[in-house]
Length: 114
Image 1 (tube, rainbow, N blue to C red):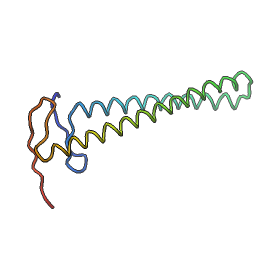
Image 2 (image 1 turned 90 degrees about the vertical axis):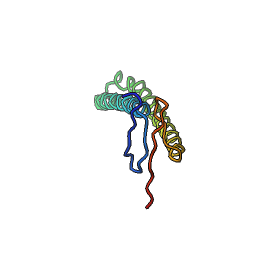
Image 3 (image 1 turned 45 degrees about the vertical axis):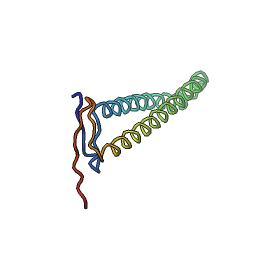
Image 4 (image 1 turned 180 degrees about the vertical axis):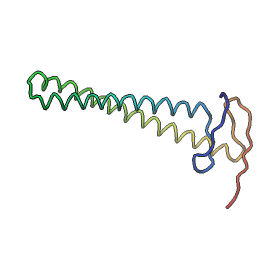
C-alpha cells in the first residue's frame, strides 16, 4: 500500500495513502469519543430521572467528562480540517508538474480542459 495514490475526491485530486490513513485514524478516534458520549448521556439521563441525590451529584463529574470529550472532538475536527487543507494545497501545487507519491517518484497527471 506504500506509495499508493487515491483519486476521486470530486475534482480529480489525488491523495497519498499516508494522508488517507491519517484521516481514517482521526475519524475512528472521533467515532470512539462519540460512542463514549452516547453512554455518558444515557447515564446522565438515568441519574437525572432517578432523582437520587448521589446520582445527581455524580452527574456533575459525568457532565464535565462529556464537555471534555466534546472539546476533544472539536480539536480532532480542527486538526482534520487543517490537514485536509494542507493536503489539498500540496496536491494543487503538484498538479502543474505532476504529483509526487510517498516513495518520491513523480506521477504525471493529465488535466483536461472544459
